Each structure stands twice: as structure tokens, then as C-alpha cells.
Length: 70
Image (cartoon, rainbow, N blue to C red; front, side, top):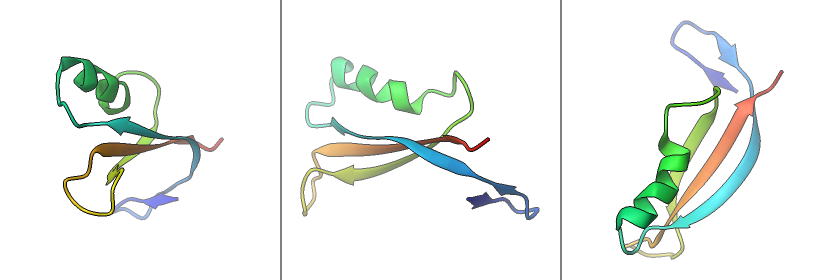
């Protein structure tokens, strides 16, 4: 659940958890990340965090995608 500043509650259900490499930071990797960062398409909530190691620099980005629960 996400609550906005006006107190409205929005409920989401996690549909995907994916780890994407971010070591080369080249055009090919950037396009893989765009699939998760794009504002186009249907409503969804995307959490982005780092992963792939216990210490920085973290070689992966982990995407948790959730769709509205209806």
C-alpha cells in the first residue's frame, strides 16, 4: 500500500523482481534499464535498488515492479 499526502491509499501487488547488470553502462545496458524506467504504458509502481554485491560499487540494479491491485 502507498499513501499519498492527502491520505489516499493505493494498493499494489508485486508482479516482478529482476536484477539487471549495470557494470558497462553502455547503450545496450541502458536500453535494458529503460524497460523499467519508462513512463509509457499502463500504471505501475517500480522500486529501484542496488544489488549484486554486499559492498559498493554495486554491479546490478534490482527492479521490483508492482501493478495496481484491482
